[in-house]
Amino acid sequence: MMNNIKTRKNLGTRVLCLSASLCVMLGVATTVAQTPKVQASKPKRINRAIELLEQGQPIYYTGSHSGTAGSYEQGVKDAQTYADYISYDMEHAPYDIKGLSEYMRGLVAGGPTKSGHRTPPVIVNVPVNGIDETSVRANAWMFNQVLATGVHGILLTHADTPGAVRAFVEAVRLPIHKQGVDKGINEGRRGVHGAPIAAQVWGVSTDEYLDKADAWPLNPNGELLLGLKLEDKYALANAEENLKVPGIAFAEWGPGDMALSLGVRGRDAAEKDPQMLAARAKVFAACKANHIFFLNSMRPDNIVDMIKEGVMVGPASKAAAEIGRKFTNRQMPW
Image (tube, rainbow, N blue to C red; front, top):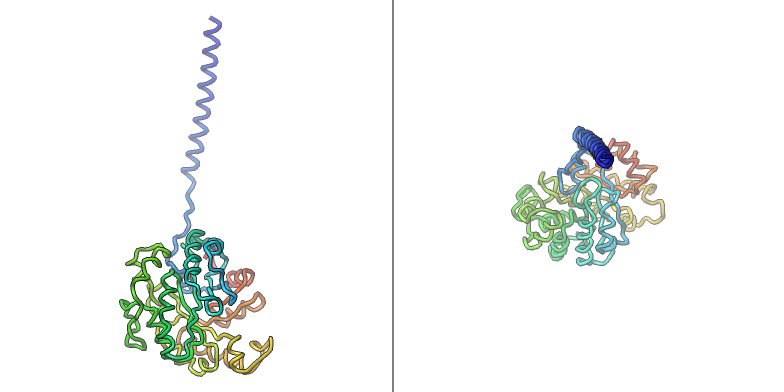
């Protein structure tokens, strides 16, 4: 008899414990159900840099003329960069397509970025000097190979003549895109066979890549940024005409090479020499006249003044970028 009573007590205790546990669990479930989920904003574009420029936000890049290490591991690491895009140097570093391809695969593996994009944008300095149209057309194969790795833009170095700039834009564009054709440029000359690999990096179908792999803002739906380095006295003389060519998004005045071309030497030359100040002013004015974004280096001590002046693109340290983003009320992670 005593054993039966004891068994009933134990059973009752277990039932009470189970009921209490269920109440707690149901309470937690109710609380979770009532708590709204915060969902990250889905990126509107593949190219974060374009997305920001469309919002009127300056963009800041990282990278150097010593070259970005072309390796898968470095790509994984750089996927979480503070910068809005990565400048990948092939102008003064080795022209290594395999290394660039591995780097792009690493960016995909290390992503998505803090802003939710598949990778940070990558803009490559290709070792094709725009001294004239013939030189650019003869070396257009380099643009094809670089674009096939899935990068998001190209800079033409020493863009000296309008003919060279036209050849550059035409080499990068696919013939299916017609914006600007017969208004300063002919149809594109890029072939289709590099598209499937690039599409994989972008995370889209080949057909979608073909639609989007075009120069912005000439093509409002384009995801490629094309830039010019007007970095010597020859490019300076043709600055206005060079920047009239459709398809260019941004330009820089390359103070390092510009100084050498103008025969100016010295550490402070870029900011003090009258020839250099005049060169910068001329390139900046040509950019404004043609609605091209101007690129200039930015430091923590001058970034606010640069933005006020109208500089929209530039290399900047993490500290400088944070100051700039705060000044323009950038809504992070954007």
